[in-house]
Amino acid sequence: MTGSALLRWGLAVAVASLAEAARVAPPLPVLPIPTAAQLRWQRREVIMFFHFGMNTFTDSEWGTGREGPATFRPAALNASQWMDAAAAAGVSLAILVAKHHDGFCLWPSAYTEHSVSASPWRGGRGDVVRDFTDAARARGVDAGLYLSPWDRHDERYGREVAYNEYYLAQLHELLTGYGSVSEIWFDGAKGKNAKNMTYHFHEWFQTVRQLQSSINIFSDAGPDVRWVGDEKGSAGTTCWSTVNRSMITIGQAGIENYLNSGDPRGMDWVPPECDVSIRPGWFWHKNETAKNVSQLLDIYYNSVGRNCVLLLNTPPNSTGLVDDADIAMLRKFRAAVTTIFGTDLAAGSTAKASSERGGRHGGFAAANVLDGRDETYWAPTAEDGRKNGYWIELRRPATADGVGGPPFNVVRIQEHVAMGQRVERHVVYVDGAPVANGTTVGHKRLHRLSVPVSGRTVRIWLAARRGTPLVSAVGLHLDPFVAGMI
Ligand SMILES: *[C@@H]1O[C@H](CO)[C@@H](O)[C@H](O)[C@H]1NC(C)=O
Ligand SMILES: *[C@@H]1O[C@H](CO)[C@@H](O)[C@H](O)[C@H]1NC(C)=O
Ligand SMILES: *[C@@H]1O[C@H](CO)[C@@H](O)[C@H](O)[C@H]1NC(C)=O
Ligand SMILES: *[C@@H]1O[C@H](CO)[C@@H](O)[C@H](O)[C@H]1NC(C)=O
Ligand SMILES: *[C@@H]1O[C@H](CO)[C@@H](O)[C@H](O)[C@H]1NC(C)=O
Ligand SMILES: *[C@@H]1O[C@H](CO)[C@@H](O)[C@H](O)[C@H]1NC(C)=O
Ligand SMILES: *[C@@H]1O[C@H](CO)[C@@H](O)[C@H](O)[C@H]1NC(C)=O
Image 1 (spheres, rainbow, N blue to C red):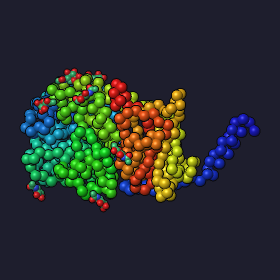
Image 2 (image 1 turned 60 degrees about the vertical axis):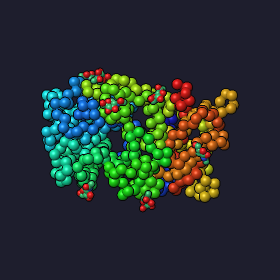
Image 3 (image 1 turned 180 degrees about the horizontal axis):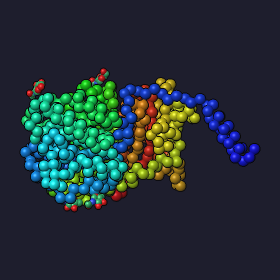
Image 4 (image 1 turned 90 degrees about the vertical axis):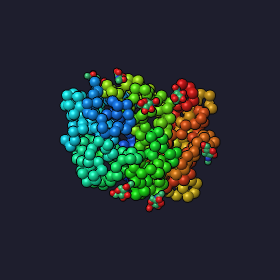
């Protein structure tokens, strides 16, 4: 045989022997499970909101609907510059408020005169939604849109059929005229003295699905993404991606706690999104400034670190640009996240577990939690839970002094949520001593420790769960901001 023939033969033998070892099938999912679009959304972790419109020019948060279109006059609107903000924050999805409660439309809707067409901006030929979606796409950012159901301008509001038809016609414009839309936002907000109006959410949602098949629909009650129940960017320390949609009425007060924590017995997969503004208000006001990095990091831990997606709002100003100071803060925030999570102090550890489904080479080994991939995960055998309970442990290499591994103060745990959210209670031990504990894990759970520790073993005890736990990652990090090192 020639060298290359020998190589081919060797490869064939290797492939054949791999094929002989029958694979162990993955365990059954625990329902409900996310759709592909929901999984993609979850893995984005941080996304952005742009509140811009009439309120930007009137220094208000809720316009009256009586503003004249002449008020809308950004001198130098540049949506590409807004994408500088998205790039600074490192996000892959940005959502624009196309119409807020004041009813003024940022695109030239054919169904009303209350839009950019009637404004002096670009001689009435501008289209903010077009600029926004084009600029996003040019930067590889997916686009989302917000269309307020509550409308304080349109005279059809309060006449049920007429207004629902108007709203649906606008949904058609937005979802057929601007390419792919990844998320649509239905805000439940409505003033106390607003006219009584029934929104035809069923018609709206089904129309959205027909027009954009891989979109995620946000409202208090989903169907794809739910509100987290507050505007502080903070989920419950217990946070299930599951709820019973039948228990949620959109816009209803009193369900915030249910939205904040989800429902361990929920029949529907509707994970929460944490909407919060980088400034005190949703719209730009001259007198306000951006939150600082430590506030933004707190928000990150309380949202992304509790199984949520963070929707961070950065409002463009009345010139039509995002303030440079806000962009600089976004850049610092992203740099801080990269500083903390860019280095995994679990690297070089070996992983052991209470058991491994199919054994060490069955495809579900403990080592999968260290490979940095969402698709692979550790799965124990089903029997193991009945005997000793489930645990996974990292054994860290010693440092030169032989004492412990490099110090860390953040523990990251991630479930393989594609197969359902399972963990109900967990405890983290370092060298046998409990250092953190909690209830749910979900896509990502982050524990901040009050002081850095440098133990040799880190064990995660999965004290209660629905079915067998499936863990896709365990990471250890050093946050210099917590420790007051920065
Ligand atoms: C708009 O913003 C982009 C991105 O910052 C910049 O490259 C471009 O020059 C700006 N356009 C104008 C007309 O200022
Ligand atoms: C609003 O209208 C609905 C039916 O259209 C009715 O059931 C409800 O009682 C009304 N609410 C108020 C506050 O008038
Ligand atoms: C959600 O629905 C399930 C199944 O019907 C039920 O067991 C559970 O109790 C419900 N949750 C609440 C909070 O009622
Ligand atoms: C800034 O001004 C707006 C409008 O006048 C006001 O509603 C808001 O409370 C002010 N913000 C702060 C932080 O004072
Ligand atoms: C960030 O802002 C908060 C609230 O205003 C303040 O308490 C904290 O000292 C600030 N942190 C830094 C590092 O500036
Ligand atoms: C809006 O932000 C841009 C960029 O920082 C700045 O040049 C402009 O002066 C700001 N406009 C207002 C009204 O503050
Ligand atoms: C869980 O942590 C809390 C403090 O955060 C502590 O009081 C409690 O004892 C811990 N429970 C376990 C089981 O370690």
